[in-house]
Image (cartoon, rainbow, N blue to C red; front, side, top):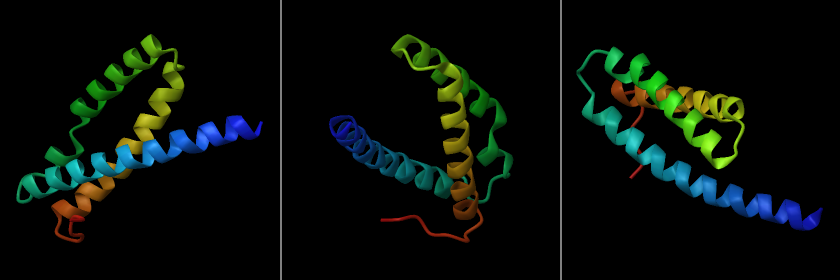
Length: 95
């Protein structure tokens, strides 16, 4: 069990680094969308397209597509909230 936990911890560290990269891109998108309609941030059609794509990629990789969808929906919701704050000028992006 310790080896499994150590391997999971290593993956989690990698995931945190990747999520930080994703966040910087989301922050940039929020800046670019300032002054535009909030629908440009929410982009429900884009969200559904991403979910569909990630479900397919998960299936190909051997990840349960339902698990992938739940993870991506949660992540997208959190990043949309961040982008909305940046879009509204409430929060400034990280350098």
